[in-house]
Structures are given as structure tokens and as C-alpha cells.
Image 1: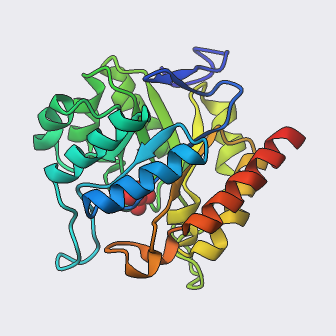
Image 2: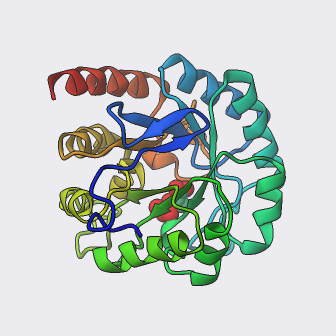
Amino acid sequence: IVSREVHPADSVVQVRGQAFGGKAIQIIAGPAAVETAEQMAQCAELVKAGGCRLLRGGAFKPRTSPYAFPGIGVAGLEQLRQESGRHGLPMVSELLDVRMLETFLELDVDMIEIGARNMQNVGLLKEVGRINKPVILKRGPSATLTEWLMAAEHIAAGGNHNIIFCERGVRSFEPSYRNMLDLSSIPVLKRETHLPVIVDPSHAGGKAWMVPSLAKAAIAAGADGLMLDIHPDPANAWCDGEQALNPQDFRQLLGELAALALAL
Ligand code: PEP
């Protein structure tokens, strides 16, 4: 279903009126984790003021250590919903556990993220395949492109064809960045599938200073959009502060991306 052989034209995935895979580059931005009402409100204002169209926020965080901050759970989704409604920005959040799907549907999460760690969680893929919400499917840290495409096929086989691929880097031998952003996956995926492809340069680089270069490279390589981590005060973020853009750097990157989009 996801193959271009079956569907030669590009598919456009609509997320509450925002199109992925069309002409516009879509930018999803927000904090890695929802912390407080104030932090979420500040992030939403930055996202809206920057002209981005979708708001992200992690409520359930898949941390490497069981003792790290795990997210504030349903309260985070509620704060995200409030800011999403206030600014007219569709909301995106990660679903970690199939038992929370009902809550995501009740709170009307506009786009469900399946994170890298769950890319091959077939039970979860099948469940999001049965609903009609758009799904962002991140690439597993060591998944081949065929495995990634097949993971999407698991979702599509259930009837949900509203899938957006998100490259976020793969595990490499190099310790100076978090993951190695595999830019080559963009042209390969664009050739193999009709579905949109976006890039998360924040989780790839793992360092805020690296994000602008990776973001621009992703757009130049043909990505349909980006997912960016931002924070009003990265040094005091509860999760992934090192990779979050501060307000000033976020605004600067958006300006550079607009210039790049015009030049392409
Ligand atoms: C995230 O987007 O918050 C996240 C944890 O990303 P990934 O699944 O790519 O690690």
C-alpha cells in the first residue's frame, strides 16, 4: 500500500487542515516534554509567532533510564490540547502504549507519533492502523529502510493510510552527536513511497547548535517538513534540553528556512 509502484503520485496527508507532502514545508515545533502550563503556553506562542503550523509536546516520554523524567502523562496532553485550541495549531504527541490509545482519541490528539523505539512494535502499529488519525512513524535507531517501509505497511494494512515518515538519525560509531542523520534515506524513501517524509534534526544531532545545519540539509535533500524541539529556557528543561533551540535561535532558523525554501 505504501509503495510508489501501487500509487505513483505523491500522497498528501492532511492533519486538521495542514497538508504534508504538498508544496509547503511543514514545521512541527514544541518542547520534547510538556512541563508546566506556563512553559507550554510560552512554547505555543513561539510556534504560532514563528508561523509554524503544528505543535508538538511529549506527555509520555520513552527515556533510556527508568529514573529519568517520564513526562507528566495525561495532564501534558491536556495542556497541549489547551494551547492547540487557543492558537489553532494541530497537536502532535507520542503514543507509547496501546492502553493509552483511547485517551489519545478522547483528547482528540491530531497526529499520533510512533517513536523510534516503537517502530517495530507490531501490536501498536496495528492499533493505529485501525483508526483514521494521521500517524508520524519515526525510524528505528537501527532500522533499514525496508524495515521502516514495512512498519508503515503494518499501519496501512489496517486501513489507515495517513502516514508520515520521520527520519531522526540512526545509531553510529561516532560519539560526537546523538544519532547519525541519514540524509540518504530521504531520496530513497521519496522514490520508494508516495507518502510524505519529514526529518527531526533535534533527536538526530542531540545538540542545539547542530540543529540549523541538519534542518537546512534535510530541506535541501527534499524533506517535506521538520520536527523541531524548542524550549523557552533550554538550560532548565526537564528533558532533552541540550538539543532544544532557544527562542532566538528558533526564530533565526525559521528565517533561514524561509529563505532556503524560496531559493529551492
Ligand atoms: C521524541 O520525538 O520525543 C522522541 C523521543 O524521539 P525519538 O523517538 O526519535 O527518539
